[in-house]
Image (cartoon, rainbow, N blue to C red):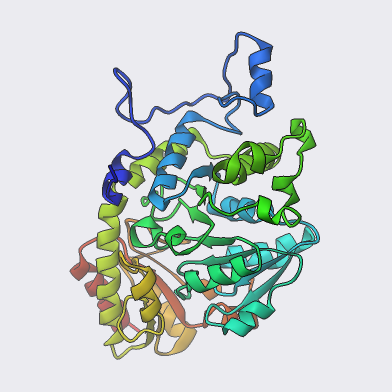
Length: 426
C-alpha cells in the first residue's frame, strides 16, 4: 500500500514490533558489545550489517535517515552533523583532487564558499553557471573530468528555482549524477528524484527540524545512477577499496546502496561528521509535523509576498509562488506543494532602509537562521553571504538591499501587522 507523504512523516522509517517502544528509541551509546571478535570483524569488513560504533552508524540515526529516504523516494540515506557536511560528503564521495564539478551560481553562501574556495584548495575545480543559463552555456561548462552537477531546488536567498529536469538531462548526457539540495522545499513541496535528480541533500536544521533545536544534515540516494556504466569516471565506487579488503561498492551493494555505503564507510569513518542520536531524535519529532507546518509556512509566505508587492515602501519582491514572479512558471512545475515560507525583497532606500526596517520588527527576530516555526529575518549581504564580493553576490542573485524574511507558522495577520509597523518606521 502506498502512503501519503503525511503518513510517511508520522510513521516512516520505524515500525515497532510487539512490545517495542512506540517512539523511536534514543540509542545514546557510542559502542556495542560483542561475544566474539570474529563477529566484530565481519562488521568492520562490511560483510555483515550491524552496529559497532556510533560515528559510523546508530539505530536512532538509521531510522530517521530511512524516514527521509522514504519521503524523498530514495533507496538509501544517511544523516550528517550538518547540512554543510551533507553537501561536502555528497560531492567529495565522487569528486576530489583533479576533478571538476558544475554548479548553479545561485547557492547558499556557505555552499558557494565550500565549492569555490575550500574544495578548490583540495584540488577540485567548480564552474558556476546561472540557473537560467542557456542549454549551450550549460553544456559548455562540462569537462572530461566533470564528476557531478550541483544545484539547489530553491536557492537561498535568491529564491531561483532550479530547472531540475533540464539540469538532470545535461548531467546524464555527460555521464554524471545531479546532486540537488532540497532544503527549502522539503519533500512536502518538491521531490527532486521524480524529476531526475540522483542525489538529494538537506540541511535538516531548517524545516525538517523546524524548531531551531538541532543542527543536522541528510543525504538521500535515488539508487538508479549506474556507476558501473561509467566505471572509469567513478573508480571509488567501481574499483576495489583496499582499506576494506578490496570491496567494490557498486558490485556488493548495487545501485541502491553503493553511494551511501561508501560515504559512510569512508567519509564518515575519516571525517567523523556524525549526527548525535539525541539530535536525530529531535529531527524526527520535527518530521512528524512537517506536512502540517509546511502548509502554514506556504500560506504565510504567499500572503506576505502579496502584501509586500503592493506596499509603497517595498522596491521589489521575489517569491516563486507569486504570480508574475520570474520563477513562477518553474515553481508551478516543480513546487507542487507550495513555495515555502521564505520571501526575499528590497526596502525602498537601499541597505540603510533595509537595516532600519529589520531593527523595528517586533515579532520577527533577526537571526542567522531560516525555515523555523518562528519568523526570522536576515540581511544576507551582511551575514550569510558576507564573504562574497560584489560580482559573486550579483551572480548569486543577491543585492545589497535584499532582506530575507522567513515566515514562521504564526497567525498570518500578525506577521503582516509586524511588517507594516516596521515599514512605517523607515
